[in-house]
Length: 506
Image (cartoon, rainbow, N blue to C red; front, side):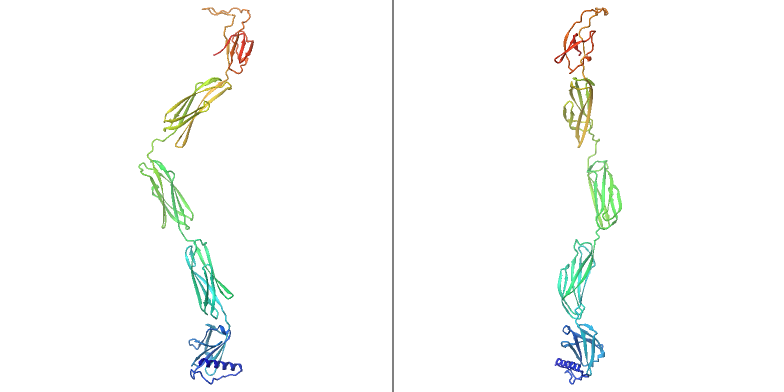
């Protein structure tokens, strides 16, 4: 009934305004009583988008007006309303300033509001925390707020990185939050990680971003290595150790303590990122050492502690130094010889070291000797003999004959050699008379008597002498008697000399 009455009153009021009638007085009061008055709000513009109207009057709590019809909102009360006491008017929760008022009767008022819809929204994005390390989890929050003057439905929010794609409804003056956790990938690049979300309503899209600073996690790292220059040692030996301390992290290490008590090492060093220090220390194996020699070094920095060891095998005490040696002595029976002579060589191979040698080789290329001594004990000697016939064709020269002996001991080759020299000359055949020359005689027991020469014709003897040379010049045959050599001729490989009985001088 009240609603009908209000509609009637509103109609009458609008009619009066349209036709210029003023000071409209309502003959009938609403059923609420004689003192019931009204506040009427008339929406001018987009009436269909209005969902609420509030009027604040004279310090009272805001009146929420009831919709009577499209564009007409009303409130009834027993108060006497005066237009000057209107404090504020809100349409859809948004205060408006573009309105006019007029009195209606003794205690009611009319308000005309010029109002157009404004579907406005904002999107913001935040992240917590704003810096993180690889592997950390951060929280992104997307906020969509309705800053317009009407409720908004179906705002699409999309964030590809977070996997968000959803529609939200936001009332006037309200906001909607969407939160999602995100784990920073282990391979995420250091620096700024930017994440963007988009909100779209109809044809209007808005973006918002949040940035996370990806930090390189400070991870201090320390390493130490140790090695020895030998694998085994005996008492009295000296071992050299190499110790390397390195910064394996991404933080500079100042004050790293390096300790090796066995060698008396105690150092404090600073190591930049990627830096290292090398120490070389020596250790003399004591005479009373027993068991393997294990040496440990350590490196420490704050709560980091690393150590490394090197183990050297302890050998029994050493005796005299093991020395391997060979000596070859070679002699020849002739220091001078002629072609066709035979040379006789004596070769002695001696072990001059203090260790036995096995499979000792002896080689003499000139005489074709290739011998192997299965075992040649320390200080022992072996003697070999060989001959060599000087060829007839050989020119004057010195024959140097070398013998070489070799053996292997402790993976090392031992070699020795010995030589002998012979001065060789071309052989010449010397001939001399078999019979003494005529013209003198010697009596037994008396000195020789030089008789006058006898003028008998010279005796002619023919003798064949075998010459071992390819060619003997006539001038090389000496005159051995008083009668000169006058005639000779060649018979085969022999030489016939006329006038003498000759023989080869042995």
